[in-house]
Image (cartoon, rainbow, N blue to C red; front, side, top):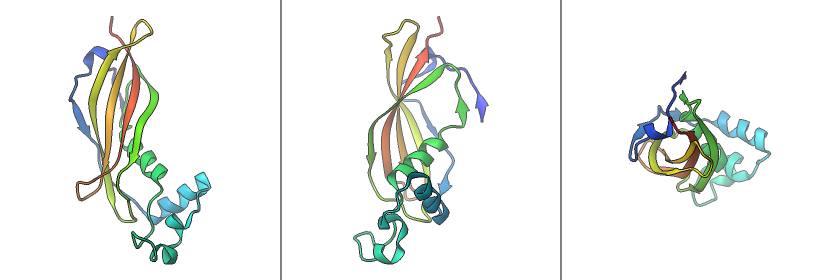
Length: 147
């Protein structure tokens, strides 16, 4: 992790970065359930899950979002602030043993309403080891202009 000042003018539409991977474990399921209180059987009951359409436990969507976004946090930009996330979709299930990584593409830029700032949209896709998108969202950043 390192600091790198990137101003609004430095962002280029279509620029892309790819993160390292992370294998999802049973411990992840248990810890996330404890943090959130989401103990639904879809995530924690292996025997019950065998009777369901996916045949096994599925990861919490919020966990995959958290881990997928966490993977993108390898660079700290003191010139940008997260405004939030739009269009979050859980596209495919993730299972214990799947390995995910994130791909971030600059998809939009616009001058901000507040003088000296602009908005940058990063389209984020979390992808499994088979190259399938399992989660997608847009990350909105408020970014300082250089001038």
